[in-house]
Image 1 (tube, rainbow, N blue to C red):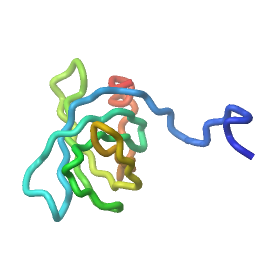
Image 2 (image 1 turned 180 degrees about the vertical axis):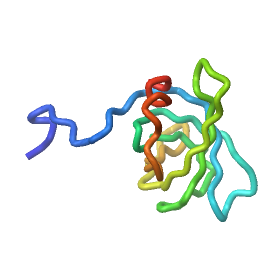
Image 3 (image 1 turned 60 degrees about the horizontal axis):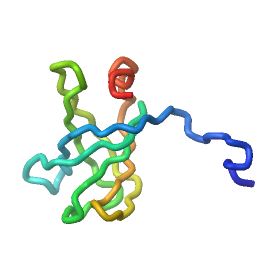
Length: 110
């Protein structure tokens, strides 16, 4: 049975579509932070658009930095790449955060 039949979302955390400029660093591989775009976000994770040129491996431990919209607050959060898919403008990676994004930060992003 498919979830679409009953219009049930199996995810625990609500996701929001965003276009949030960010930077990422792959632990043990990167020598500097590089640009990416967060395209969906929840309190538990994010969909991130990476450049095609980045050879990202599943289970990579990553750090993300971004400015919280309409504030001067910069957030750094750690996550793990769970999956990736190629599309015309880059690679979309599914990131699971190590800890929940605080509710007040998620509210500003969504």
